[in-house]
Length: 83
Picture 1 (tube, rainbow, N blue to C red):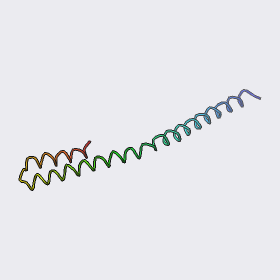
Picture 2: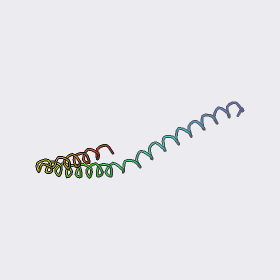
Picture 3: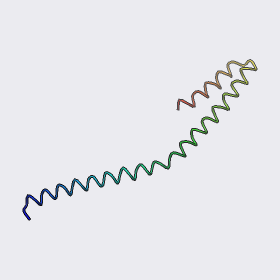
Picture 4: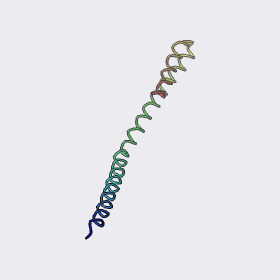
């Protein structure tokens, strides 16, 4: 085998190895992050629940005439969506 053919085959082999390694990394890392979806959904659900509670308390305070407390509670509810 000539040295030129050997060098060409070696370059092709290195390129193929890089492609295979890259594909493996992409496939395995994306599947690892797939498990975080339910955890993220639970976090969203808990923020929605907490915001709803603060909203209800804020509206109760509004109806009772305590507008400062109402604004404070409603502001806290809105802050949950900013974080």
